View (spheres, rainbow, N blue to C red):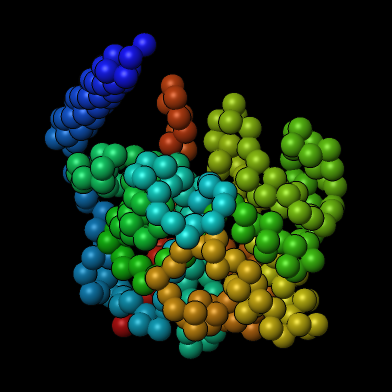
Length: 343
């Protein structure tokens, strides 16, 4: 075969590949356009009047049951998120590929008393979240699972801002001061840095995940056991994400006991821990700020069940998903107790 014929064949192949790619790109573009328009139509048809009626904390003062409240300026609201992805969080990801917020916790940091309280927010809580297409173009807001808000971002700051916005929406417009998101790997790193966390297995069925997880057994979690204990749920069981929050609460209180014990041997343990997870977290706080949060947790009294709240509400099931609807009245009482003062 002469050289000219070979070149002709190569050009034909290259042209065919170009045409195939162009056609595939057009199909994807058309599909995304149709998907975007479908979402826009769905958003336009929604009635948000019930959701928008809960805007109690958008104003400077709050009137509740004949009393007036104002936000405590020295109590900071810090959103903590556990993201269901592994590996470092140093780089951004394409929209839709950054994971979801599998654990959502709002910390009330009293900077005067140096104490913490925590509000656990079910991942399946229904609230208004911002939707985007795969290019990051904002399509609008829709009533969706809170956990999904993180995915409509870049896996880093934009995702955290989407979650912060969604949680603020859920909390009646209350301002959230800071955020910190961490990946799955952090669970094992934190657990082993304090020598393990002692827990008691509360339910049947967890031995399917780990033979040591027999109901009633008390054990000190090591390595991957910590992630298994905190995250395991039977997805075939209704409300499994809600039920595991009791285990998460037990683990959190156990972790604080362990880190206090270890701090007696190593006064720099908090700094050492944060140094070890730098690549696995994203935050808008400076180092001195998040270290202050951790030191308040370490220096205050033991974090007990009474210091950890759970958003009140009602769980429902659909044909496809579990859904959780917050109770505005009960949530108002919790927010006032954690972040406000009577005037």
